Image (cartoon, rainbow, N blue to C red):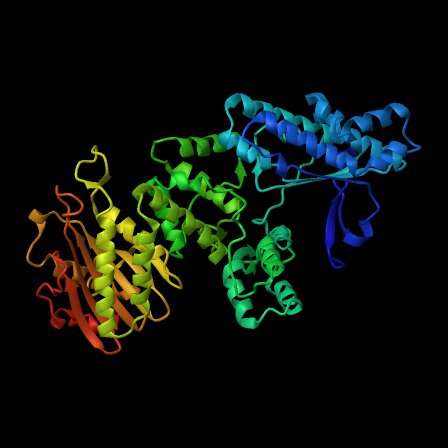
Amino acid sequence: ISQSKILVQNSEDDVFCRHEVDALKLQGTYPVIYIDFKNCVSDRFDTVREGVKRVLNSCFKQHRYLEKSDNLDEEEKEKIKRYVGAISSEGLNDDQIKSGLKFLSEMLYQHYDKKKVWILIDEYDAVANVAYRKFNADDLDKTIELFTGIYQNALKGNPCLEKGVLTGVQYIARSGMLSGLNNLGKFNFTDAKYAQYYGLDQGEVDLFFGHFQVPKPLGDKAKSWYNGYQVQKYNGNSVTSSQELVSKYNIWSIVSYLKRGEFSHFKSHWEESGNIDFLGELLSKPKVREKVEELIDGRCISFDRKDDFSANDFKQLRNMIGGNKEITSDGLAVLLSYLLIGGYLTIDGPTQNAYRLPNMEIMYEMGKRLINYYQHIYAIDPAKIQSATNVLQDIMSTPHRERMQEHFKNFYDRVKEIICTVRMVDDKNAEGVFANEDIVHSLLNYIALQTQHTTLGSELYTTKLHSKQKGRADIKITNKDVGVIMEIKCLPVSHRSDNHMKEALEQAMSYGNLLDTNKNLFIAINVERGTRTSEERSIEFLCASFMSDGQHVFGINASGDYDTFGVNNSIMKGFTEHVK
């Protein structure tokens, strides 16, 4: 704190005079009003207004000494009591609410012999963020009008104001709420000059870890969970910024982690924020689900970023959440920008046109919502999914052929049990889930997503081995030792050939360049697409393994019996050097 600097903007006569001063030299030299609107968030205007009354009441109580001030007359003191009293504050009308902060600044100005006041407003946009997405038109208009009145009275043309500081998640442009405010400056984490003041850097976290005696291996793991927000390093030039990136920790997450004291236990500390609960509804949109799966896979995505949100952007976001129409490219950019501003994405590279998930904490939050989506649409017993996940986990950690084949059969049985609980239909208009590769793909994604210490990839576009052709690997799962490529088919009986499983396995193996692990599995899966019931639907698995004890092929046919579908080690010739 002693090294902190603060940028002071003197707005007297609307003339900017910028200079840096030591923060501690300012401490205690100005009267300060602090107010936080976070707890005013609600689902309708009436309860928002009551929340604002309570917050104002609490704010005035911090300055009850004004009731005994020699610099205020009796009428002013009585007016202060109206805001301070628990009962009287409930009777405040809208005009009194809107003028409350300005009135308090005037009283402080008089009490402190005409010393101007700092007004600090935290979570200034918390109510608006929810209101734009959830309120009806009438409640939204009333909410924006109320907060516009509060901010304009306190911050516009107030002769008792030294400086006003508002902090929040988004800068809501063209909303009316901040319209007309003079000399309004905006500083966020994409601005290199001010990014240095966001989050904690590695040196600062190392000091905390040293103080709390966090063992180094656990500190390194904490880095993967809570670090990763990339900001541009400021080079001291007000015009250009450095191309070097600095990685930042989430302050709230680090403080919560240290406060719990369970240094070997890592968890998400975003659970209570609820900022992206609506994402679950949007996962039914293929474009959104595809982007989320890419991010969980650790890949970067690109979009046209919006730094300022307008009322129309919020309206578009609201329509996406509650509508059935496919999302447009512009709508997708609005959604992803919302996630970026909310701290769920970070830039990847100094050009700031690629974005990714910052760390394991956010990956957990995204993955949790994807899992909940799959649970909802398939209505599958979570215990059955967990059973299949446990077997897949065993496959990923078993290096020898005998146990591998045993686990493979077990995985087949668990997947078949799940498939048999899903009503898959051939008519898109029939009741049930339309049977195609995407559905089976999603089910297996759902299972793989919950494995521990693995990385999941889905629909990975790459050049095939021994070919200049491009293709997409359906699923890739890797840990530090084992890599798996899955190729998924959903063929009706009439479309099967004698070689359909061999061809699927060869296709899986053609994506071997995606793996850099020592032990690799290539799995072909076919789920019958036909008119029979789910219980009768046939499922076939075929696997080629490259392990420390050699190369092996094993499979399971529609009857549940071991079967290699006529495939032997000879088909792996030519791929061996690439996939070992």
